[in-house]
Image 1 (tube, rainbow, N blue to C red):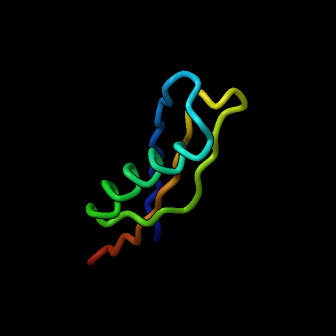
Image 2 (image 1 turned 45 degrees about the vertical axis):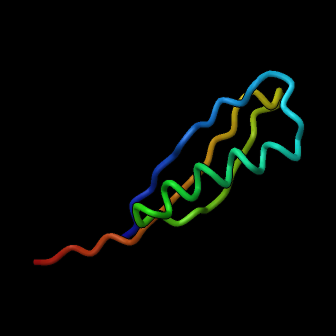
Image 3 (image 1 turned 90 degrees about the horizontal axis):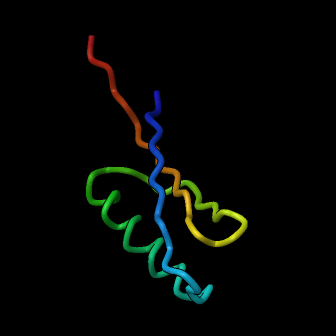
Length: 62
């Protein structure tokens, strides 16, 4: 079974597109250290924020 998680990054006004990657990378690293795997990132149409999707395996012991 997989657990899913989302994280939203609010971007500074007038951020350059190449700098968006830096913001995403910092957020992904933070979650990676907690055991989450990066799935995808989707910016909004105005580039005001980016939603990042993560997942990780969940093992249920019975």
